[in-house]
Amino acid sequence: MDMIGKKMEISKKEANKLFYAIKGQTIPLDWSESDICRMVDSYTQRLWGNSERMIYTEDRFEKTWKEVCTNVQKRGII
Image (spheres, rainbow, N blue to C red):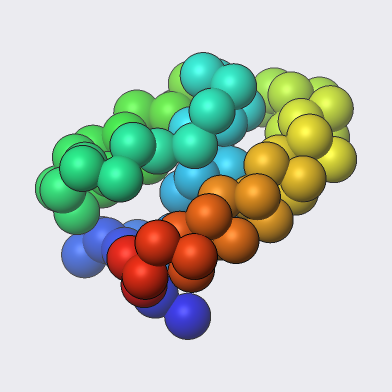
């Protein structure tokens, strides 16, 4: 499992889940690790105490995540 972050390790899937909860899409493929770390810090603060948001996006995110993983594997990006 690929992990991101220096202060707090988080999987790429969990980072994408945070981004999806706010933006409704996954992290762009061209983002750097530092971009993702800043987003994780910011969005974690933004979602703190708003547990309903994560619950309501779970099913949609899982479907989107499977599609993204399939497309990335087909393109040979991973």
